[in-house]
Image (cartoon, rainbow, N blue to C red; front, side):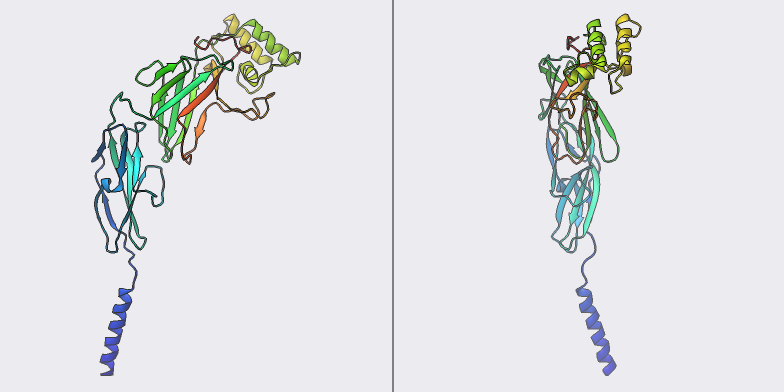
Length: 315
């Protein structure tokens, strides 16, 4: 009888112990097939529930979250995410589920983005560019390079004279539909690599030579940058030689094929007498951690070799 009682006690104790064992099983979570969820407006919000095919758990209630690709690797702060017309095609997203005991499951799929072609979609990217004397440009290219957390690179070129990519507000100011979104490493730069002789004369050679000899110093960091014809980070007689060859027609382009150099407007030179130290920025760079990349990008353009700023920006 004593052994029977002991056996019943052990069974009862084991049952109670098992009933108090915490749930360690994550929710069952399965996403919909890639492309099954489609957005066809200029903007769209996708909820976690939109991309989930099936979900169950024994502990409940379940909290949901969603991440766009590269937007985080911990449980999301929100159950919805935003897409705009800077995206396109299939965009990876992940749904997350967490039960009341903290067990987490996640699954990944892709949302199909079929935004209208040439639609008037906000937001917009704004680009402004002028010379140090505030002469306005009308024929520059903008290069945007976006790199996600997987190392994939997505280049984009914006031409103000190509209506499919941009439209001109006024000289030196144009806009393009789209936006920059956090979670990506982003670079924005301007290019204009034509007509290297634009604004370059023997008078510029004289001014640069006087600067090198210390007879009459160039009085602007932008003029000193313009004097660096071979773009080696200093002004020397080699720059005079390069520009003389250009004027005489011995060469037909400047080193590296560049005619202009562009800097973010508002950059403050730590040393205006030597703008090359530290190296000045030639683009806008936003790390993946940037919470709110801007939508406006003003630049200053400097014509290489033109130290008296006589170049025509449209030439």
